[in-house]
Length: 380
Ligand code: PLP
Ligand code: MN
Image (cartoon, rainbow, N blue to C red; front, side):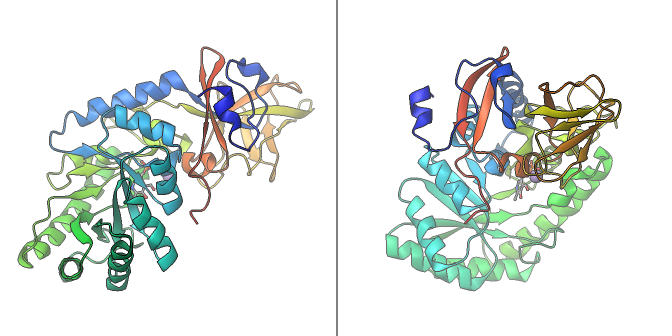
C-alpha cells in the first residue's frame, strides 16, 4: 500500500507511511503489527490441535480486507461476515470464500448478495422459509447458486430455529428450491464468549454441542446429511473445536483483543490470554487540571464504552472516565502534560474499529501501513 494508492480513498488519513508514531494525528486506531502477526500464528497453531476442524475468522472485528487476506494466508478456509456491507468489502478486496453468519433480508439486499456469488463462493444463514424462497429467486435471477446455512438457536435467543423438527423443515424447503444448496448448520452463542471461568465456558459449550447434536439428529431423521457445523468465537473456540460436533470455528476478536476479552481466565483460572493486545487508540492530552485530571481528545465517538471504559496502556493507576462524545477524562492526572500521547486499550474491539476509516499499522515506532476499514458502518 503506497501513499498514492491510499490517497485514492477520499477520507484524509491521520498519518503517512514512514511517519514516526509521535507525528500521528489523533484519535487514531493503530495495530502493532508484530503482535498481530503473533496472533495469526497462535490461532493457526491452536487449530492444528483439532484435525478436521477448519477456522473461518470473523471479519466483523476489523472489517478490513487486507486483514482478511492475512488471515487467509495463515490457514483460514474463508472468512465470516456479519453484514452484507462487510461481505461486499471482502469480495471487492479479493476474498474468495465469504460466509455471512447472519440473516440477510429484502429483495434489494438479496440481489446484492447474489451478485457477490458471481465472483466468490458465498454462503449465508437462514431461519425462515420466506427468506429461503427470496434467496432462491434472487439467485435464479442472477444465474448463481447460494449455499444456505440453517441457524439454530443454541441459547442466545437471538436468531435461529429451535433444534429439532424446524431444522429439518427448513432443510426440506431448501432442497425443494432451485439455485440454493443446504450446506449445514450454525450453532453460535455470543454470551458464552465472555463467561470468565474457563471451566464454566466449557460447560456452556457442552450445552451448545448438545443442542447441535439434537439438530443433527432431526436432520438425519429427515434424511439429510449435514457435513458442516459452524460456530464459536475467541472465548470458546477450543471447546467447540474439541467437541466432536463442530467442523468449523469463527473467532474474530483474537486478532486484536480488548479489555473485556483480556478479563477472561485461562484453564488454570489466571488472566493469561493466549492472544496479545495488538489494537490501541492513540489519543492526545488536550487539557490538564494539575492534581486532579487530564483530558484526552478521545471520547465515546473514538472508543466504544459498551463493554466498559478503556484502560490506559502502561499506566494501570490512571483511570479513564467517560467525558462525553469527544473527551476522555483521566484521573488521577499522573505525570500527563498537554500534548502527550496516551495509548488506550478499547473495552470492546469490534464497535471501536467500526468508528474509524483507517487502521494504521505500526512497527518499530513507525507507520508501516494504512489500511481502509472498508466494510465499516451499521451494515446497510
Ligand atoms: N460468530 C458470530 C456469529 C458472531 O456474532 C461473532 C461475534 O459477535 C463471532 C463469531 C466472533 O466472535 P469474537 O469476536 O468474540 O471472536
Ligand atoms: Mn465483539
